[in-house]
Image (cartoon, rainbow, N blue to C red):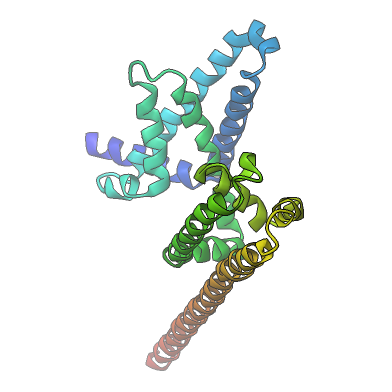
Length: 267
């Protein structure tokens, strides 16, 4: 009797998790909670801060219920929940809410739940391909990023030695020099910095042109190339999976037809 009741509860939780209205309700709670978190930053809303606290409490209760339903739905295989990055992230936020003295950090943790909006990606195959490509490109992008860091460091130190006496605000320290280089690599008003440096050093164009060429035109385009390559590979993989699925369905259909013919002949 007890096992039957447990089984019915589990089946109910499974059906609830698979219903779109359940996920839509959770998403609505996340958006409302995120809105109240933003409104809390305005002093004029201090008069209704009790309402904000109530909304945050209700949201936390909903998140706890959501986690409980999902855990029951996967019983006894807990790995399906705790080895899922999204579910583990949600569970960690719930745990943080009960840590004494966590203070305003939980507000940031609740706001991070907005990332769950990425669930919408699952409904669109093209968006899934882009996200999958981005995840696969991380190792290659990390190497390009390391190259960019080395480039910024070399040119940052060189910029301090060449232009700190002319424009200390932009080139006085390694930190300010790197910030200036970041502005240059985005090609935002970089000519202002360039002409001021050129007025004191006629060979400054070599520094700027080489950095723009390496940083903006070559390294940045490496990022684009990596993404294009991974998106192409993901598309090929998706097409292959679809073809495999179609072939499997076709084989099953043919087997059913053969079984039907055999049963007819037996009769």
